[in-house]
Amino acid sequence: MDPPVDDAPSKAIEYEPVSVKDVLVEMKDTAELLIDLSYAAVLHRNEDLAREVIRLESRMDRLEMRAWMSLMMAARNPTDAEELAPVFGIVGAADQISDAAGDVAKVLLEDIGLPEAMREALPEAVESLVRGIVVADSSYADRTLKGINLESETGVRVIALRRGDEWLLNPGPETTLRVDDVAFMRGPDAGLEVAYEEVTGLAHEPLTAEPPDLADLERAVDTIVHMKNLSELAVDLAYSSVLFDSEGLAEEVKNLEIEVDALESRFEAWTLQAAADAPDPVKLRGLIHLGRATESISDAALDISEGLFRGIDVHPVVTMAVEESDELLTRIEIEPNSELVGQQVVGGILETETPLSVIAVRRPEEGWLLVGDADETLRAGDVIIGKGTRTTSAAVAELGQA
Image (cartoon, rainbow, N blue to C red; front, top):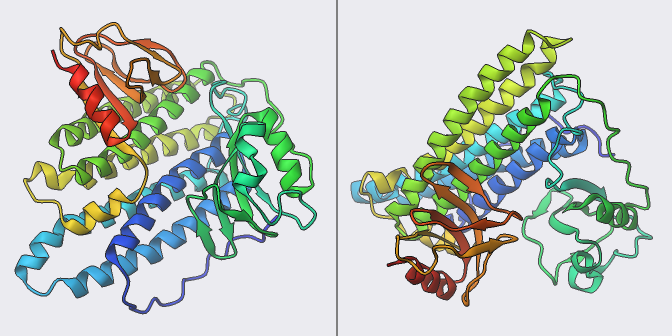
């Protein structure tokens, strides 16, 4: 186990010429990983993961300062300042996401209070996330991820690596695992048992399941996971709305933020009511913290797309930054006579001649459905959020029209 993270004040950050685009890409990718790690830490009660969140939060603080410095140097006149104003907003929103993720991790690290049986109450579909340090005699050491073929063999994905103070946020097939790398792996429990032992030389010991000590705890945990997933989707859509200068995507960010607000309000009310019957009401304080932090993430996503609602043009540096990460997200509204009415989404894939990965469906009478691995039949009036190439997205969008 690593030593505790040093909470001493960070060293002074001196200005150095850096690309604003590169810093924005790092901030976006860091924010997404922070959300992932922080909730995994709490839901699986993993303090090692929680400490990594604090490390990443410190990294985000440094990235934010470098972004501020570079932006101030770039603003040479009032026109520059006006054009860069939305970029300042995006930087601030990424930092807000980082702070919220840090607050989630501190629920565990500062023992604010959580029901003991949260891990047992997790939905079966939620994959585990573990942290392991690559040992010298690991069969994975000094091999590429492609050479290891980890995902095909075990279903486990390496979502990030930490190499000393350096983070590799998007490891690809040619990324090499080195001795002492800290690997963050996500996948099914059976696969993680194999992968973790190969990486660390130690047996993977998942948290011992505790019997539920609170009525409706499973529903409460379902709500937390749902809120977290909606907030993650809001962040993804917010960046895409900026990239494509799309008020339609920005509108969906607003819809998601409203939904998360409503869920957080109901969840807080449930927590307060549950406290009356709980053996130890103090252990529920962390649930309220989780709800508020999640709502803060969706608020930050709305801030990212705020410039679109104000009619401010997207600055080219933002477009360049968002273009470099992930696939294209698209919004498709299904009209009544569309060919998509009655089409199946199976395992998250739209079954048409032009398949599209469907992340979520917004149904007017039901709200947001996070498709994931579930199956769904599309209806007229549905708004689908999909991920794919430009060609695939354009073809499916055409099918959505009457």
